[in-house]
Amino acid sequence: MLGGGSMGSAVLAGLAAAGVPDLRVTTRSAARSAGFVGVPGVTALSQEERPDANREAVRGARLVVVAVKPAQVVDVLREVAGDLTEGAVVVSVAAGIPIRAMEAVLAAGTAVLRAMPNTPAAVGEGVTGVAAGSAAGPEAVAATVAAFRTVGDVLELPEERIDALSAVSGSGPAYVYLFLERWIDAARRLGFSAEEASRLVTGTAAGALRLLGAGDDPPAELRRRVTSPKGTTERAIAVLEAHDLGAILDEAMAAAIARARELAAG
Image 1 (cartoon, rainbow, N blue to C red):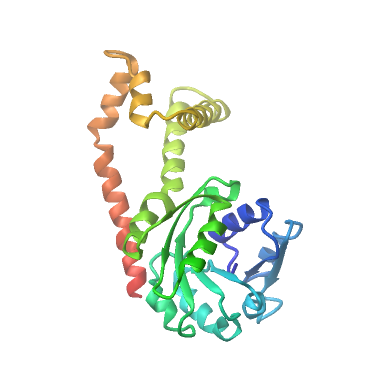
Image 2 (cartoon, rainbow, N blue to C red; image 1 turned 60 degrees about the horizontal axis):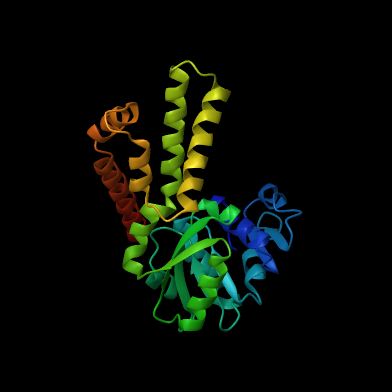
């Protein structure tokens, strides 16, 4: 794992919890590296202490996950290209950087894929999209899918859809947390303390999601059961729908996709 930021750390935590052996992670600072001390099966190398940390980490690795910022992906791959083991599979979790840009700095025939996980991977509840480059054969795809399946659900798709997936599920946890923040704020304005508001909102959200996961009914059906005709919930839902949540989400995700394309263009 080249890069121990929020996304890399989330995936690494999930892999470690799943018992995947011989995990290595590189970080820029020693302080960040220290955060991985004691995590079972994880060896952390900091570039602050070991300038060749990235090169050391990839030697002998069968799967190399690049989890640095998008602007750094190509430079990091160029740095480690000569140290990759023959047959190693390279997977980027960065938004916006196309497979062709990564393939251009690696040896011909290197299996390159893009994966877009999300932070719930840290607790084994992630959703990851995986797209394969032309040199990534069935075995490379299977290895990547197997790795990310240890931290949640995996959806295989063509690369042209990866930015859209990033906007939906990659950024998705932030949408959920933002809604919960605003919901808690609203509860506090009704007179509840910060602690009471948090318990009411997060408990309700967690319970609603558990109920959704416990059966086969879609969200629309579960919402219908709560929304009695001419009742209080129906009135509240009408206010939310009057602001056209669908259009707001369309606009938000379009902005995320546009930013991914900006990153790809450099």
